[in-house]
Length: 313
Image (cartoon, rainbow, N blue to C red; front, side, top):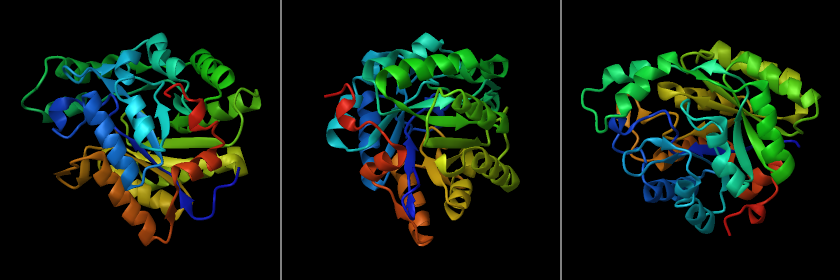
Protein backbone atom coordinates (compact mmCIF):
# COMPACT_ATOMS: atom_id res chain seq x y z
CA UNK A 1 0.00 0.00 0.00
CA UNK A 2 1.65 3.28 -1.03
CA UNK A 3 2.34 5.91 1.59
CA UNK A 4 -0.05 8.84 1.55
CA UNK A 5 1.67 11.79 -0.10
CA UNK A 6 3.80 13.79 2.36
CA UNK A 7 2.33 11.95 5.36
CA UNK A 8 4.77 10.81 8.03
CA UNK A 9 3.84 8.38 10.81
CA UNK A 10 5.19 9.30 14.25
CA UNK A 11 5.53 6.35 16.60
CA UNK A 12 6.09 7.09 20.27
CA UNK A 13 7.79 4.39 22.38
CA UNK A 14 6.67 5.46 25.82
CA UNK A 15 8.73 3.58 28.42
CA UNK A 16 10.41 0.41 27.12
CA UNK A 17 12.55 -1.95 29.16
CA UNK A 18 16.02 -0.52 28.58
CA UNK A 19 16.13 2.59 30.74
CA UNK A 20 15.81 2.39 34.52
CA UNK A 21 14.24 4.81 37.01
CA UNK A 22 17.59 6.13 38.23
CA UNK A 23 18.39 7.45 34.76
CA UNK A 24 15.57 10.01 34.62
CA UNK A 25 12.82 11.21 36.96
CA UNK A 26 10.61 11.66 33.90
CA UNK A 27 10.57 8.01 32.79
CA UNK A 28 6.96 6.82 33.20
CA UNK A 29 6.74 3.90 35.59
CA UNK A 30 3.25 3.53 37.02
CA UNK A 31 0.18 2.72 34.93
CA UNK A 32 -1.12 6.24 35.50
CA UNK A 33 2.16 7.78 34.35
CA UNK A 34 2.28 5.56 31.27
CA UNK A 35 -1.32 6.42 30.40
CA UNK A 36 -0.86 10.15 31.05
CA UNK A 37 2.26 10.38 28.93
CA UNK A 38 0.77 8.25 26.16
CA UNK A 39 -2.32 10.44 25.90
CA UNK A 40 -0.21 13.60 25.87
CA UNK A 41 2.03 12.11 23.15
CA UNK A 42 -1.00 11.43 20.94
CA UNK A 43 -2.24 14.97 21.49
CA UNK A 44 1.21 16.16 20.38
CA UNK A 45 1.03 14.19 17.12
CA UNK A 46 1.91 10.53 17.66
CA UNK A 47 -0.22 8.12 15.65
CA UNK A 48 1.21 4.88 17.10
CA UNK A 49 2.03 4.11 20.73
CA UNK A 50 4.62 1.38 21.25
CA UNK A 51 4.00 0.10 24.79
CA UNK A 52 5.75 -1.89 27.50
CA UNK A 53 4.68 -2.31 31.13
CA UNK A 54 6.60 -1.85 34.38
CA UNK A 55 6.11 -2.99 37.94
CA UNK A 56 4.61 0.13 39.53
CA UNK A 57 6.44 -0.56 42.80
CA UNK A 58 9.99 -0.29 41.46
CA UNK A 59 9.91 0.28 37.69
CA UNK A 60 11.19 -3.17 36.74
CA UNK A 61 9.96 -4.31 33.29
CA UNK A 62 7.07 -6.74 33.60
CA UNK A 63 5.17 -8.90 31.09
CA UNK A 64 2.14 -9.20 33.38
CA UNK A 65 -1.09 -8.66 31.38
CA UNK A 66 -2.78 -7.40 34.56
CA UNK A 67 -0.38 -4.46 34.64
CA UNK A 68 -0.91 -3.72 30.94
CA UNK A 69 -4.64 -3.70 31.60
CA UNK A 70 -4.19 -0.95 34.16
CA UNK A 71 -3.30 1.53 31.40
CA UNK A 72 -4.34 0.13 28.00
CA UNK A 73 -8.12 0.58 28.41
CA UNK A 74 -7.70 4.24 29.39
CA UNK A 75 -5.42 4.96 26.43
CA UNK A 76 -7.88 3.19 24.14
CA UNK A 77 -10.82 5.16 25.55
CA UNK A 78 -9.18 8.60 25.51
CA UNK A 79 -7.26 8.48 22.20
CA UNK A 80 -7.64 7.16 18.68
CA UNK A 81 -4.02 6.00 18.65
CA UNK A 82 -2.85 2.70 17.21
CA UNK A 83 -1.86 0.58 20.22
CA UNK A 84 1.30 -1.38 19.51
CA UNK A 85 2.30 -3.84 22.24
CA UNK A 86 5.83 -5.15 22.44
CA UNK A 87 6.60 -8.81 21.83
CA UNK A 88 10.22 -8.07 22.68
CA UNK A 89 9.56 -7.39 26.35
CA UNK A 90 13.04 -7.49 27.82
CA UNK A 91 16.10 -9.72 27.51
CA UNK A 92 15.23 -11.42 30.81
CA UNK A 93 11.75 -12.59 29.70
CA UNK A 94 10.81 -15.88 28.08
CA UNK A 95 8.87 -15.88 24.82
CA UNK A 96 5.75 -17.08 26.64
CA UNK A 97 6.03 -14.11 28.99
CA UNK A 98 6.59 -11.72 26.09
CA UNK A 99 3.44 -12.99 24.36
CA UNK A 100 1.13 -12.98 27.38
CA UNK A 101 -0.25 -9.44 27.06
CA UNK A 102 -0.44 -9.32 23.25
CA UNK A 103 -2.38 -12.58 23.11
CA UNK A 104 -4.87 -11.28 25.67
CA UNK A 105 -5.40 -7.92 23.94
CA UNK A 106 -5.06 -8.91 20.25
CA UNK A 107 -3.88 -5.39 19.34
CA UNK A 108 -3.82 -3.83 15.91
CA UNK A 109 -0.01 -3.90 15.96
CA UNK A 110 2.85 -5.56 17.81
CA UNK A 111 6.58 -5.15 17.49
CA UNK A 112 8.41 -8.14 16.05
CA UNK A 113 12.19 -8.32 16.37
CA UNK A 114 13.67 -9.89 13.26
CA UNK A 115 16.69 -11.64 14.72
CA UNK A 116 18.81 -12.42 17.76
CA UNK A 117 21.53 -9.95 18.78
CA UNK A 118 23.85 -8.99 21.57
CA UNK A 119 22.17 -6.05 23.31
CA UNK A 120 24.63 -4.50 25.75
CA UNK A 121 23.66 -1.51 27.89
CA UNK A 122 26.12 -2.12 30.72
CA UNK A 123 27.95 1.12 30.04
CA UNK A 124 24.92 3.08 31.16
CA UNK A 125 25.52 1.86 34.72
CA UNK A 126 28.88 3.66 34.83
CA UNK A 127 27.12 7.03 34.56
CA UNK A 128 24.86 6.52 37.58
CA UNK A 129 26.09 7.38 41.07
CA UNK A 130 22.90 6.83 43.06
CA UNK A 131 20.44 4.00 42.46
CA UNK A 132 16.76 4.21 43.35
CA UNK A 133 16.19 0.45 43.36
CA UNK A 134 18.52 -2.52 43.92
CA UNK A 135 17.51 -4.36 40.72
CA UNK A 136 18.76 -1.66 38.36
CA UNK A 137 22.54 -1.99 38.46
CA UNK A 138 22.71 -5.81 38.07
CA UNK A 139 20.05 -5.61 35.35
CA UNK A 140 22.15 -3.18 33.31
CA UNK A 141 25.53 -4.76 33.97
CA UNK A 142 24.16 -8.24 33.31
CA UNK A 143 23.24 -7.26 29.75
CA UNK A 144 26.84 -7.99 28.70
CA UNK A 145 26.13 -11.68 29.20
CA UNK A 146 22.68 -11.77 27.60
CA UNK A 147 21.54 -12.51 24.08
CA UNK A 148 18.30 -10.92 22.91
CA UNK A 149 16.82 -14.10 21.48
CA UNK A 150 14.60 -14.03 18.41
CA UNK A 151 15.09 -17.25 16.44
CA UNK A 152 13.25 -18.17 13.25
CA UNK A 153 11.08 -20.50 15.35
CA UNK A 154 10.29 -17.62 17.71
CA UNK A 155 9.43 -15.31 14.83
CA UNK A 156 7.19 -17.88 13.16
CA UNK A 157 5.40 -18.59 16.44
CA UNK A 158 4.69 -14.91 17.01
CA UNK A 159 3.43 -14.45 13.46
CA UNK A 160 1.12 -17.45 13.61
CA UNK A 161 -0.30 -16.73 17.08
CA UNK A 162 -0.82 -13.00 16.61
CA UNK A 163 -0.94 -12.46 12.86
CA UNK A 164 -2.79 -15.53 11.65
CA UNK A 165 -5.11 -16.00 14.62
CA UNK A 166 -5.78 -12.38 15.65
CA UNK A 167 -5.14 -10.25 12.57
CA UNK A 168 -2.39 -8.29 14.29
CA UNK A 169 0.14 -6.59 12.01
CA UNK A 170 3.74 -5.87 12.88
CA UNK A 171 6.35 -3.22 13.39
CA UNK A 172 9.30 -5.24 12.07
CA UNK A 173 12.26 -4.18 14.21
CA UNK A 174 15.51 -4.55 12.27
CA UNK A 175 18.70 -3.92 14.22
CA UNK A 176 21.07 -4.94 11.43
CA UNK A 177 21.17 -5.67 7.73
CA UNK A 178 20.65 -9.40 8.21
CA UNK A 179 17.33 -8.69 9.88
CA UNK A 180 16.06 -7.16 6.65
CA UNK A 181 16.95 -10.37 4.86
CA UNK A 182 15.26 -12.38 7.61
CA UNK A 183 12.07 -10.42 6.95
CA UNK A 184 12.42 -10.96 3.21
CA UNK A 185 12.82 -14.68 3.88
CA UNK A 186 9.62 -15.04 5.90
CA UNK A 187 7.79 -12.85 3.39
CA UNK A 188 8.88 -15.18 0.58
CA UNK A 189 7.49 -18.07 2.63
CA UNK A 190 4.17 -16.28 2.82
CA UNK A 191 4.25 -15.94 6.60
CA UNK A 192 3.73 -12.16 6.47
CA UNK A 193 2.01 -9.98 3.93
CA UNK A 194 2.63 -6.41 2.75
CA UNK A 195 2.71 -3.58 3.48
CA UNK A 196 5.83 -3.99 5.61
CA UNK A 197 6.33 -1.40 8.34
CA UNK A 198 10.09 -1.73 8.80
CA UNK A 199 11.59 -0.05 11.86
CA UNK A 200 15.34 0.23 11.29
CA UNK A 201 17.21 0.75 14.55
CA UNK A 202 20.53 2.52 14.98
CA UNK A 203 22.96 3.08 17.83
CA UNK A 204 22.46 0.00 20.02
CA UNK A 205 25.72 -1.69 21.05
CA UNK A 206 25.64 -5.09 19.37
CA UNK A 207 23.76 -3.85 16.30
CA UNK A 208 24.36 -1.53 13.34
CA UNK A 209 25.87 1.87 14.07
CA UNK A 210 24.26 5.32 13.85
CA UNK A 211 26.44 6.65 11.03
CA UNK A 212 24.68 8.34 8.12
CA UNK A 213 26.18 5.73 5.77
CA UNK A 214 24.59 2.94 7.84
CA UNK A 215 21.19 4.62 7.75
CA UNK A 216 21.42 5.09 3.99
CA UNK A 217 22.53 1.48 3.47
CA UNK A 218 19.65 0.10 5.54
CA UNK A 219 17.22 2.31 3.64
CA UNK A 220 18.47 1.25 0.23
CA UNK A 221 18.59 -2.43 1.22
CA UNK A 222 15.02 -2.28 2.49
CA UNK A 223 13.87 -0.56 -0.69
CA UNK A 224 15.60 -3.16 -2.83
CA UNK A 225 14.04 -6.04 -0.89
CA UNK A 226 10.50 -4.70 -0.46
CA UNK A 227 9.97 -2.07 -3.15
CA UNK A 228 6.57 -0.39 -3.09
CA UNK A 229 5.49 -2.66 -0.21
CA UNK A 230 7.86 -0.84 2.17
CA UNK A 231 6.95 1.75 4.78
CA UNK A 232 10.36 2.66 6.17
CA UNK A 233 10.80 4.08 9.66
CA UNK A 234 13.79 4.86 11.87
CA UNK A 235 14.70 4.69 15.53
CA UNK A 236 17.86 6.47 16.66
CA UNK A 237 19.01 5.50 20.15
CA UNK A 238 20.13 8.11 22.65
CA UNK A 239 21.64 11.29 21.25
CA UNK A 240 21.15 10.00 17.71
CA UNK A 241 17.36 10.19 17.94
CA UNK A 242 16.63 13.53 16.30
CA UNK A 243 19.47 13.59 13.72
CA UNK A 244 18.45 10.19 12.38
CA UNK A 245 14.77 11.13 12.42
CA UNK A 246 15.59 14.26 10.42
CA UNK A 247 17.59 12.26 7.87
CA UNK A 248 14.75 9.78 7.47
CA UNK A 249 12.17 12.52 7.07
CA UNK A 250 14.24 14.07 4.29
CA UNK A 251 14.40 10.71 2.55
CA UNK A 252 10.81 9.54 2.62
CA UNK A 253 10.81 7.82 5.99
CA UNK A 254 8.65 7.64 9.07
CA UNK A 255 10.00 8.29 12.57
CA UNK A 256 9.95 6.88 16.08
CA UNK A 257 10.74 8.84 19.23
CA UNK A 258 10.01 8.32 22.92
CA UNK A 259 11.67 7.80 26.28
CA UNK A 260 12.20 4.12 25.51
CA UNK A 261 14.73 5.14 22.87
CA UNK A 262 16.24 8.33 24.29
CA UNK A 263 15.91 10.17 27.60
CA UNK A 264 17.05 13.51 26.19
CA UNK A 265 15.53 16.34 24.20
CA UNK A 266 18.88 17.83 23.25
CA UNK A 267 22.49 17.77 24.34
CA UNK A 268 22.61 17.53 28.13
CA UNK A 269 18.87 18.16 28.47
CA UNK A 270 16.54 15.49 29.79
CA UNK A 271 13.17 15.29 28.06
CA UNK A 272 10.47 16.01 30.63
CA UNK A 273 7.94 13.86 28.79
CA UNK A 274 7.39 11.75 25.70
CA UNK A 275 5.25 14.55 24.29
CA UNK A 276 8.23 16.92 24.31
CA UNK A 277 10.03 14.62 21.91
CA UNK A 278 6.93 14.20 19.75
CA UNK A 279 6.46 17.97 19.55
CA UNK A 280 10.10 18.46 18.59
CA UNK A 281 10.10 15.89 15.81
CA UNK A 282 6.77 17.23 14.58
CA UNK A 283 8.29 20.71 14.28
CA UNK A 284 11.15 19.23 12.27
CA UNK A 285 8.75 17.41 9.96
CA UNK A 286 6.55 20.43 9.38
CA UNK A 287 9.53 22.71 8.74
CA UNK A 288 10.54 20.25 6.02
CA UNK A 289 7.11 20.70 4.42
CA UNK A 290 5.79 17.32 5.56
CA UNK A 291 2.51 16.46 7.25
CA UNK A 292 2.03 14.26 10.29
CA UNK A 293 -0.25 11.27 9.73
CA UNK A 294 -3.29 10.95 11.95
CA UNK A 295 -4.06 7.60 13.56
CA UNK A 296 -6.76 7.03 10.92
CA UNK A 297 -4.28 7.73 8.14
CA UNK A 298 -1.70 5.45 9.76
CA UNK A 299 -4.30 2.66 9.84
CA UNK A 300 -4.94 3.16 6.13
CA UNK A 301 -1.23 3.19 5.29
CA UNK A 302 -0.51 0.06 7.34
CA UNK A 303 -3.65 -1.91 6.45
CA UNK A 304 -4.65 -2.42 10.09
CA UNK A 305 -7.74 -4.28 11.24
CA UNK A 306 -9.19 -1.34 13.19
CA UNK A 307 -9.48 -0.35 16.83
CA UNK A 308 -12.90 -1.95 17.31
CA UNK A 309 -11.40 -5.43 17.00
CA UNK A 310 -8.98 -4.92 19.90
CA UNK A 311 -10.02 -6.55 23.19
CA UNK A 312 -10.17 -3.36 25.23
CA UNK A 313 -13.78 -2.28 24.86
